[in-house]
Image 1 (cartoon, rainbow, N blue to C red):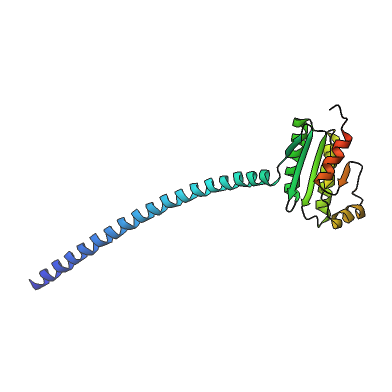
Image 2 (image 1 turned 120 degrees about the vertical axis):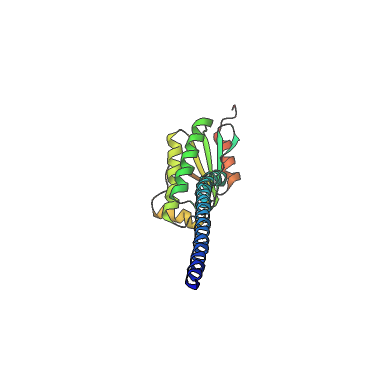
Length: 183
């Protein structure tokens, strides 16, 4: 009889351990499902955040290079910060679209806030001036730093498409002299 009682005790203990194990497995499966749902939410959130980052980057690019309609036929672009390949392409594209839309005759490119420390940046400025010229607008660059002017001459980047003045007021005065009084 004691052997039967011992076997029953061991069976009861085994049943209890089996039930605990099943509860643990069920709890673990529930945690796994919760983690999977959490991961899916994180993936969706990450996708939304990436979309938001792209939209914000585009907005910052637009705000960092406003195109101002100063007078009828006169646009001004105050540039601030570095002008890398990507930004230069965006600036050029937006500027040319605006020149065409506004039927601009003059574009003032104010580079006072741009550090033109490399050849590429200087080349971007000249390329923008040439492109606006192809659309029939005259580009006036103002605010060039001495080092930038020297680099442009050394690289042979000065051109007939590029007119330069000391500052924005000098650029505006030049436009006033170029526009016939009847307009």
